[in-house]
Image 1 (cartoon, protein in one colour):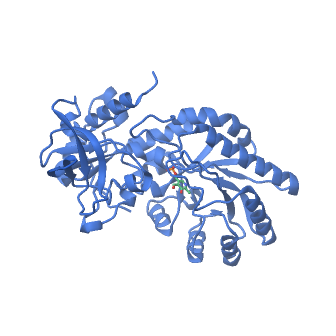
Image 2 (tube, rainbow, N blue to C red; image 1 turned 60 degrees about the vertical axis):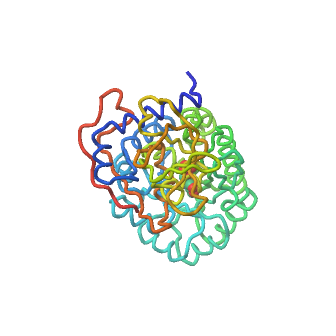
Image 3 (spheres, rainbow, N blue to C red; image 1 turned 180 degrees about the horizontal axis):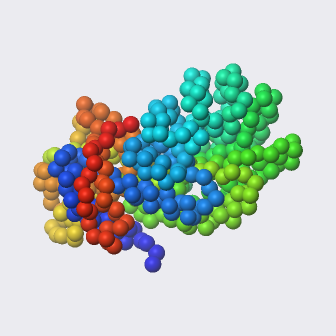
Length: 416
Ligand SMILES: Cc1ncc(COP(=O)(O)O)c(C=O)c1O
């Protein structure tokens, strides 16, 4: 049966209920209070397995920026996943976790010369460029064995975040960059792109791959060279408050284009959100209740400047459930506004939420809070970062099969 918005919300509610009933979740809330993010690394492993099954010939590099928690890195490293970094801090995090540099690619198109030097010294060899000034940095840095990927820009108006205006070049500009790299003795190994984050449009994904492959063939024919790498970026969407194309559906649409290319090129991808979004649940509590001219307002102890930063930076519409509604929503109910704890009036998480009457101290739960949440949180108003408790035995996806958790949580790990 195809999922509708209503059945999705019901599924998310049941997933939250399953986690919240576990000993792990209760122990985490008892230990940390609220707000607290409950992270289940087994969900990350499940998503990685789905990606590998759907696209078996693709080498995945998890985009560390999306959730840099050590438990996520450890789970993916253990599974053999590669990593995609954007800064020296992320390289250091991977080093601390024992990830070998040949498993790491650096995809930030604009870097300080010193960052390039440090990444090269750390053993990383695959980098992204999208302009001549950046190429020049590699020439001056003396990196003849670096494998450069030229990032292409594809507009994706339907993506949650279109990434084509800040970075990436047209096919024509890319061709000129390849010529310049040749002249400077640098190696352009291939091309990369990012179709836009949260892109619920498999055909757009397929078109970007097709266009890139066409450019690669054209340049190969013209110069007799052979490229070796094609990096198809990230962008796989996740169902927050409405259904989206499953990654298996996206794979079904892109494989006819991608499969023949796998014989000629090493295919890389940089998934982020699809791996981690579903792995974390945010538990907050009600700090205050007020009646305003537009109705009831609830003030939570986490907000847009904290874990709900995905609302600001990614346009996410988070689902928000009262804990007492998780088993079965009960009357009386009302429409209410949910606000964050800071004194900034932009700190509004959601409006028109269907909620039971809540009191100060009641728990409120949001699912799908693993991506672009803790990493983009700030300490605005002097508020501390929300702790992350790693659930070791919750297994959201196993909970129906195997009952609830047995072992307790590990210590909350600091944010990278
Ligand atoms: C270069 C790069 N790769 C990968 C990602 C991860 O994208 P997503 O979370 O859409 O999979 C991002 C996100 O901004 C990015 O900038």
